[in-house]
Length: 115
Image (cartoon, rainbow, N blue to C red; front, side):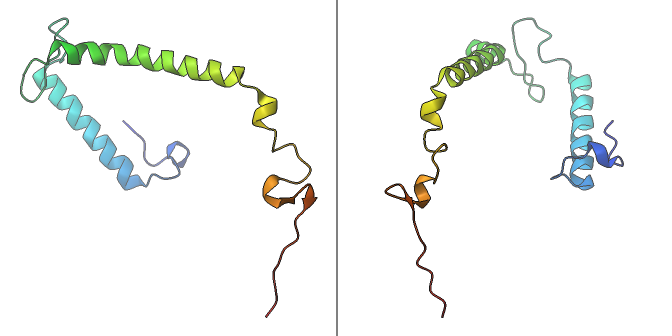
């Protein structure tokens, strides 16, 4: 069970009430899962817990392959990012004055007027 009294485990955006609600929801789900059974008990079929309806084969295939697909897409993204030309990526970062402050190579002066 989640220890909501330990501040070291709390996320900075989570209040103790949110953690308590999450704990309550998880415990309720576990209770329902124990009462109605494992939705994957029938082998390759997926059964909705609340209605006992069998999901279509395409749904089961999607759910079983989503983790592998996510890992493949992540690997492609990381590979593409690493292979990117870092000099081109940081071209504007490495200038003496950033382009937003530059006026044809010289530092642009401000136009602030004191009223």
